Length: 375
Ligand SMILES: Cc1ncc(COP(=O)(O)O)c(C=O)c1O
Image 1 (cartoon, helix red, strand yellow):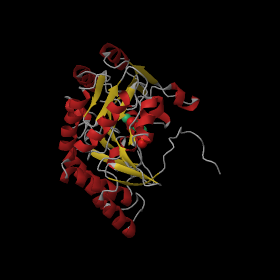
Image 2 (tube, rainbow, N blue to C red; image 1 turned 60 degrees about the horizontal axis):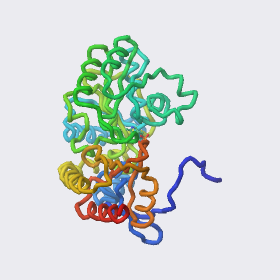
Image 3 (cartoon, rainbow, N blue to C red; image 1 turned 45 degrees about the vertical axis):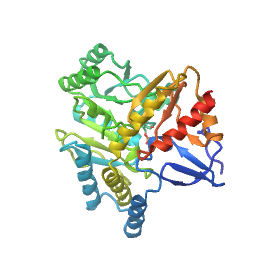
Image 4 (cartoon, protein in one colour; image 1 turned 90 degrees about the vertical axis):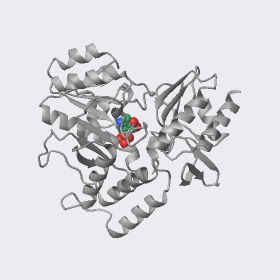
């Protein structure tokens, strides 16, 4: 049976990975500055992570959400401690889209409203309401288009006010640093005004931290750079370091009701073991400090390269903008220099999303290759 052909593929076949490196079937070593799309947080095959998953699957890999699962409680407690999201409650699921889908559903249940406000170049996943709130018409099928979504310009606070005051908006969903769109960020004033408008109009603010969360921005969550209190925070990617796990953090003012949300696989024992190992390593190896240190180092070198027109993003969620499309540059980096990088909807942007364990010598390796190609 052939695979349904939805992905344009690079001709590389990884069979093994360790730390910041990936290896193909010929043992060629690739530097991973893409992190499998911002997923690898603590590094590939981290020994603590491998041990935790191996031990757990040998004991109990899965049971349903109908029984006590102390690993979920342990994960929620550790997440609260490391994220500083005091008293938020946790609902576990399996992916970023599913996290946003549940966030939007909860906002609609609780406010009794159904329209969503989202932003230009935003990306929230490929399921029903999540894809409708994504600013990319080519991935919205007619069945998704029946959702009521209004897409506004980032920083247009008057438009947000006008829409929220109509009284039918259940949620404003936004990325504090846009990922797929190309690393744009609104102003602090805009984010903080949106938060106030949400509070005064019975609208939930959903922080989509699927990509920017878990330390990638240089804080545990990117929204923590601002004076805002999201009702819901969605998480996935770095949470499992490759193991499929997602979730939403829910503000203590929002009460749960049996049956309101649910899932078969979400929060299973194996996923929790992976999620706990990730948090332990983030804490023990002080990875958020490393993110900030490596981010400064990266930016300092990037500023010395004249062909780079703009450096975007924060922490290790970075973008280099050129005055040409970067498709060929990415190919050269992969095939000639064995370095993975990312692209964006903005075709002139090269995205850098390494494991949070990246070191100066890896960054040097990238810039030596980049300068060689550009010269
Ligand atoms: C900000 C953001 N939200 C949601 C998603 C969807 O996550 P998933 O692919 O796990 O469904 C992504 C994926 O790239 C993302 O970057």
